[in-house]
Picture 1 (tube, rainbow, N blue to C red):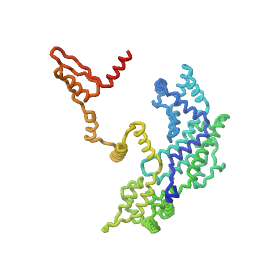
Picture 2: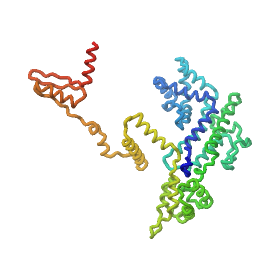
Picture 3: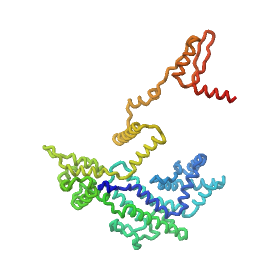
Picture 4: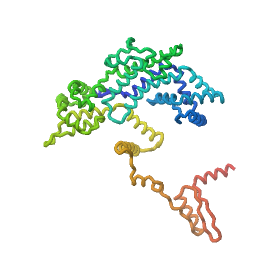
Length: 469
């Protein structure tokens, strides 16, 4: 693509890269743990077992939550499954034990035997401790806000938190993350000092052959997670994400940062060369960067949301010289807003694709493009109203438009009160207007009879039924 569009910017989805890190790191966990997660979900496919399990949950005073299934296409699926199993552990253990003894069910017995292993619950706590750091980053990256200026910082934090499980924190804080030596054994913590929760720590100090295997798995699992992050994110050599931090409002309002980190802006301009017209344009942007100190004091006194870089730079671009009306900053704010418009992940467009796929193929097969576009616009407007007003308020016009009487108005039931000789014509007219089966009252002088009106399809069905007889 770069041969046709030289200045194209390639930004991989960080959330998807993190999900790949989880996938390959989980290969260090014994296979029977993943098999146990799948078996638990299979066990509760039956409605009867779900109902019986609710009773067990109440006995243990646990939340009435269902057991989740692991879906590979869901980024946070495995972490959610692990958390739910830990939460419902006591109820699951008791339920599968009774089920295997009373009903002699093989799957329940298999789950009970696996949960009875001394290291089983420790593995779930270990997985939860590591995946929790991954999940924090994945949830952050799916935000609807402009978060590009904070992605690199969050990625570093995720990496350091995982590394701190087996590596000394003093070493982590003293060295640049890109130069960290993961294989420096002198900086490793002992098994008993691993930075994990109390349940996993108690399992690590047990002097047993099986628990020694657990200690080794803990080390391999954490190391594989770190190696995957380094591999997927190019050893933190992320030029665009690393340099765009200079557009963070907090950094912009720091005099020392603007002076010492001006090279970040220059490097960002190189990554976003498509936004730069010529050398003169580049010089104008750098000049306005140096002039930010003029309005720094005024900006500090303005109530401005510094967590939203887009609004911050739009405010900078709206500043004018008193009396002349000339804009103080013309080139820098425009460049900043354009650079921040690069999508931080593919989560948002993928949701749109899923929505289109649902309404086009699964929900309403014949929905036109115009209706689909209107649906997406209406959904976005509702989300905007929620963000602005704290909730979407329906107007009286909307309510009146979606009532039963407005969508399906009632039809007046027509009665046929004619002479006998006019009855066939009246019936023909009535059948042309009504396709459903009705009973038409027919009046004569002596009695009242009801004539049953049938559609053509009904007549054909009756004829075929008579032939069969």
